[in-house]
Image (tube, rainbow, N blue to C red; front, side, top):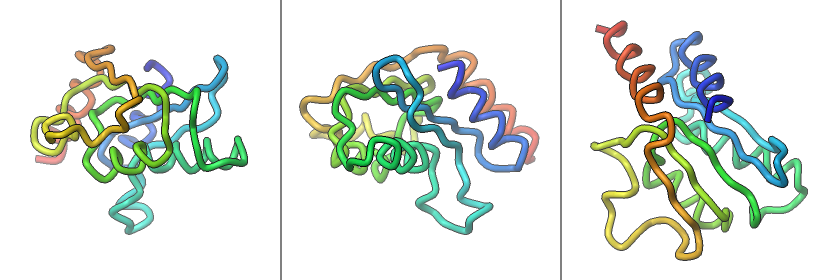
Length: 137
């Protein structure tokens, strides 16, 4: 999660909503990303989407079986859908997104075989988001 926080800081430095994501397979980072929605003028350029694309490219395959996503903010419904289709094994996120987070959806938007864990480095992950929006005001 600390590596995902580094990605979030990179997003913050370019005035993007500071969310970072890392995908790990066999104890190796195979994909990473941070929000680029403003930079690319693309509403789909979320950190998770960037990391999924990088990991799939690294593996040369569309499925991320045996992989774990670490992301600083709970994935939204769009990202949950992409993660569903990727068949990722595990999702670990830091801060909850009370407004747009996928965990509020019933039934779950995540693949039934995907393990989901939350609250990892939650204080640090929440702090960077709060700081970003305070600075924006």
